[in-house]
Length: 160
Image (cartoon, rainbow, N blue to C red):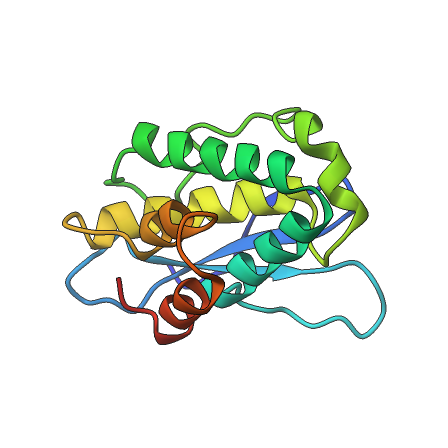
């Protein structure tokens, strides 16, 4: 259980991988990585701060649509279940779910499709490893409600 598994490829060619995690108390822990298309592009690990900053970039372009995306992500969180298998699989996202948010793809580094897939995977990982709380849920709940400094600070520190 040490190999990297290609879990999803977005429409623009970004590959989303899963690797076994390192938490000894959770045998279903996993790490999310991605690689964008193009020469010299390296594999990266999406962090909470990257995702929340992307949401603010999209919010500056289309506030109402971005809040709709935030609400969609919170609905996804409520539907997800912790896992007792590896590798994880998407539980809610279906190809085409991103179409309603297509206008947000005009700005930022990540497509909405990427955000929906990666955020769902991070939420599954958190629900599996931290059943009493979720940093991702807190960040998206606070996004658009609390001041930007507080939300970005929470994402940077990594504590709910």
